[in-house]
Image 1 (cartoon, rainbow, N blue to C red):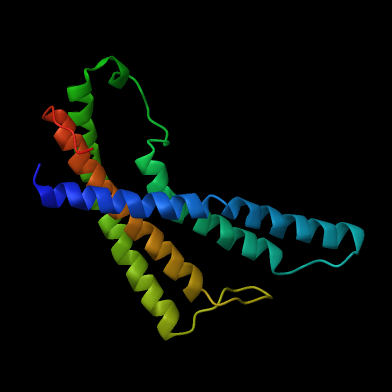
Image 2 (image 1 turned 180 degrees about the horizontal axis):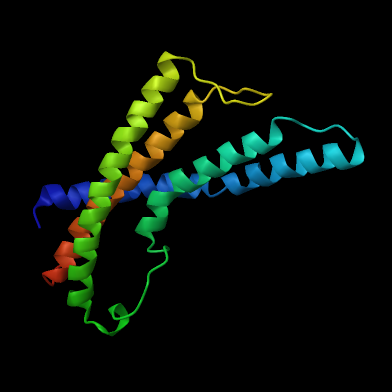
Length: 170
């Protein structure tokens, strides 16, 4: 593989590893929000109207920003009917085809994310609830997460293609 592709894969994986390791601590933020809400409602009889939405936003950020790291670590679910019996090269070839479709899907998802984020910023879009938080911050985070997954999917495509050819990018 050309040095530019090797550099691309190395840089993308370093960025996604760093983001993923930072974001993985976000589960404690989510737990804190839910614990605060539960204690407030149970012990003090004071319901917090923002807790559920903040938990949803935190979980969306957690999943989307951690998605690229999950892809990198091969920690996703795989349906294994035939795949496990194939040779490494055949698995890599199948993975490169799958990665192509993932890139295609994520490119459209990123386009929609940009469009939705622009709308949220331009019209100061707010969530329809009593708390009415602005949606632009979470949409920006979601779009960044989708972009990181797209970059990682392209890196995986290159890695799988190299493996299918009997080479390594590491």
